[in-house]
Figure 1 (cartoon, rainbow, N blue to C red):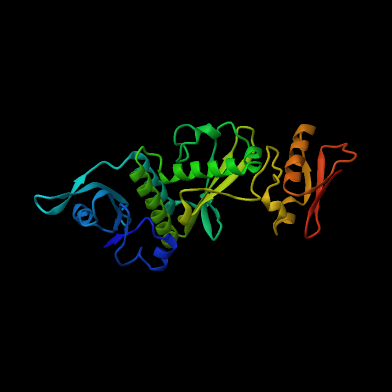
Figure 2: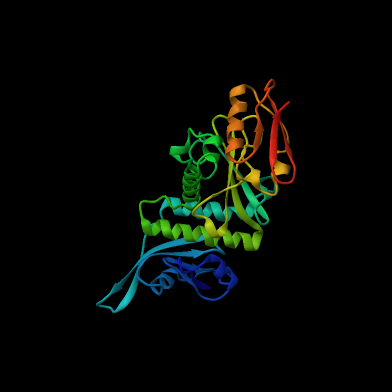
Length: 297
């Protein structure tokens, strides 16, 4: 069964049209052909350029360069190697179908996989290479900078989807392939997202989520960041409907520097901080249904 999937087409529209179960579709270099008998023939009928034929049912990839032979007046598909980042990303996505319960958690809209990662993970211990430029960051650096959040999300997304080759064409194909694969796994096996839980070198944590329609960029999860002591770090969740559930209560700190850094972040996100008479290393935060207020106690 062949599907041509256009990279410029919204994935949600493809899903709505049921293109992963029946019909034909092409995605700018990506052709889905389940239980494919002749991948070369399928590639040759898809147009010129780099083409990847993916067999979701058998979890196989076939790479081709398609060209038009003017003498023979027909298209020819010449076998080419699929870059390692592309094939690794595909295997990683399809492997989500076989996760055990301990690796699953509630995602944005259902069940997702949770993958713990650390800047010093050896090689591809958890499936991706940690972005080099972020290895010395902390959770505070991410919550305090929209630019850092965006760059980190793009870097994790590229690593997840295998869009880290030296070819623009292959990067585009790999991104589309990861979208198609994750949608396939979601539809048939219920794994609808991947959450990367980063534990930074200082022990603080940041979480980002990847979903089928945005595999190119991991989205920062508000309200999930923690400092090294496990205190929830103030971010945009502080002005959301779940602010009370996340931040109300007592927060303990190992020293005044850590407590003041938390307070500075809290002010950045509109939390009311009473700094008078600070004598202990505990902050007590309350929620009145509209705003958060924290005092030393």
